[in-house]
Amino acid sequence: MSLYGWIVLALSVGGTTGSLIWCFARVIRNLGKTDRLHATTDLDPHDADL
Amino acid sequence: MASRKKDSWGSSLGVILAVTGSAVGLGNFLRFPGLAAKYDGAAFLIPYFLALFFLGLPIAWSEWAMGRFGGQQGYNSCPGIFRSIWKNRLAPYLGVLGLIVPVVIYMYYLWIESWCLGYAWKYLTSQMSLGMDPATYTTHFTSFVGLQTDGDFLAHGFSLPVICLLACVILNFFLIYRGLSGGIEKVCLWGMPLLVICALLVLVRVLTLGTPDPTHPERNVLAGLAYMWDIRGGLAGLLHSLSNAEMWMAAAGQIFFSLSVGFGVVINYSSYLKKRDDIALGSTTAVAGNEFCEVSLGGLITIPAAFLFLGAAGTVGGTFGLGFQTLPLVFAHMPAGQLFGFLWFFLLFIAAITSSLSMLQPAIAFMEEGLDLDRRGSVSLLGFITLMGTGIVVWFTKDLAALDAMDFWVGSFCIFILATIQTFLYGWVLGVKRGREELERGALLPIPRIFDFVIRYVSPVYLLTVFVIWLHQKGAENLEAIRTQPSVRIALFFVAAVFILFLLLIARAVRVWRIREERKP
Image 1 (cartoon, rainbow over the protein chains, first blue to last red):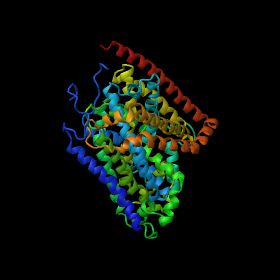
Image 2: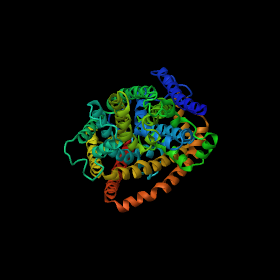
Image 3: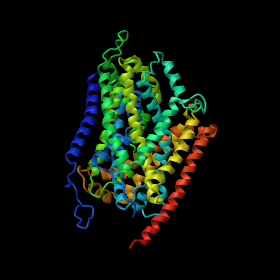
Image 4: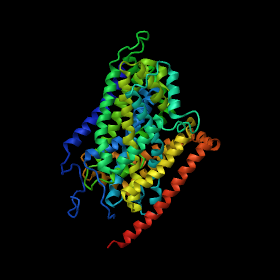
């Protein structure tokens, strides 16, 4: 396999595997947490679902 | 809105795995590698990843947002969710596609699922030692499915293929009856890790085969990987491949179907989330999970394995040819092939059942919330409808005519229409501002600002362009099939009947919803 082939393989497989691991790590880290990041409209005091 | 006890997910991990399980199917392990091999390996990945970022991911985000938005208004089904987003009398009727698409796909997907179960059973019980002649595997598949004449599949009474089909029917309805968290979520929580373990075992086997046949030294692991991943013909070859419009179409189609966007399932699943549950990270993780299974597992296993034993000729044959004829021949050549054949078909079975389960939930949600049926009633009614459809598919088996017709007109055509409607609803009716508020509430991941522009302008244009060219390429032959094949006409007549039935049920549901709204203080 040529160098380009290895680069394509590494980027594709590494990219998809890496993004899955990164996403899952964040999901697991936040399991059960109630505080949320990046929220812009979280300030409804009447919200019954809190 | 509803007085019934509301179904819900047990955990955020559960919903992510359920959506991933719905998306991961045979296409990840068979269709994607087949297309990549057909369209010059690495060259295919450029339009593939562009379609992921400009079509798949934005539509997935918008579906999750619309689903949770509808869920907060008390709706879990597509007709109800569309009605909550768009205050137009037509809106709930457009949602019929969100019911008909998964229900009809279920009718034939169940049969394919039973093939995977049957093949896995045959490997487990050492009944798949058919020798090294490729024709034997073709004959075996033809006989297993009953491809030669209509009615052949059912002609042999309680044969293994029929028993497997019945087992899949019972298993699906047993699990769906157990509800969202007790059935679908539990299956996916166990099934998805099991699927990945099976795939990793097969992957390790394939990558450690070296040069299995010394008489063919050119067929080695590196050459197999190169066939899938290398840029054929250098930069000039890459540019030549990229000028192929058909490849761009195939890549967009693969992303679109692989992620199950426009399917009616994601919008239903996300409607069970709570108001402040994260959807940004959840949807992105589900997409990442699907891509991992497709690119990292499917891309490293299927084509390299076929190339190792059969050379380039072994990498063609379409999804069913590659999966049920070529790969069994590959396992026959492979050391410990019976074990790895079992693992492979068992993982395909898990991928299939996590998908088929998801296809029933949208219609069940609609029957529960719109017709006030309980779980038992809605599962029974849906079971009756889908069994009739599956009956038609497994009767008209000659050249898979009924299956292909349903797959084209519902599994492709209607999905395009539904995705276009959803993109329009999100970008232009709900609006990107309200949509973003929905996405960002409880978000554990920032969604890039450019998404608003992409979902409003780029995705619809991309989608419609792909749709028009795809229809131009495939429409004529499928219209011709309706004209010439009675089995296709019967299958589509049944689909039309189910379509009308659901429209009538939606009309009744709308009346029920109106009365409830009028009674509200």
